[in-house]
Image (cartoon, rainbow, N blue to C red; front, side, top):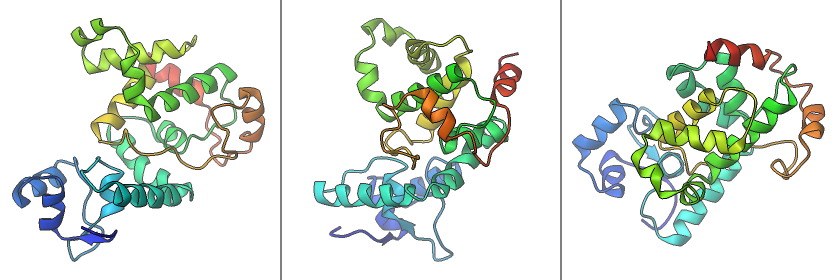
Amino acid sequence: MAQLGQLTITEAADLYHVKPATWRAYVARGQMPKPINSDGTWDIVQLITRRDAPLPPELKTAALCQAYRINAAGAAWQTRTQPHLVQDGLACEQAAIFADSITPSGMTRETFTTARKILYLRKDYRHEVRRIPPVIDTLTRKELYLVIANRAGSAHPTALYAELGKMLIARGMEEVTPPWRPTPDFYSENPRKFLRLLEHSQILHTFDLSIQAKAA
């Protein structure tokens, strides 16, 4: 495979070293995306952002760069991610917020800070896991995410953030890059400044009430 492009079911299955029948089962269970058109083909960028694949370094770099450009549109990330989150039980407004890292009006500074840290930990999940003591081996994956969420620190319930991380990892999305934000320094900027920047978000739901309802 020398370039980016569309793959047939046989080529997609070969890419992940499985049989076509196994590939169909993955797609049916939602473990891999559906074909992008009626011809039954998959886009290699679509696949590599869903689950890592053994590609030559130069091709993998090209695919990830293309994924960055797709995510730069903002809406593309939300369109792909939000339905998965809703399907897994998050309320629509919660899914919209986290799918595109949008801060709605009414979201407290503490909640924003924690959400930002959780998104960062998801982005660099494997590195963060290596920093957790070996005793983590005795915990379930959900408990692992609770540990990571608690490491971020917040007065708000961490269970919701842990569930979000578990859902995304289960969907094979841990390698996907974060979406577009008002500034490339999203993770290093002062939260108060970002609350001002994002105050005029199109999503006007009050997030704290959603957290309380989820935690109840």
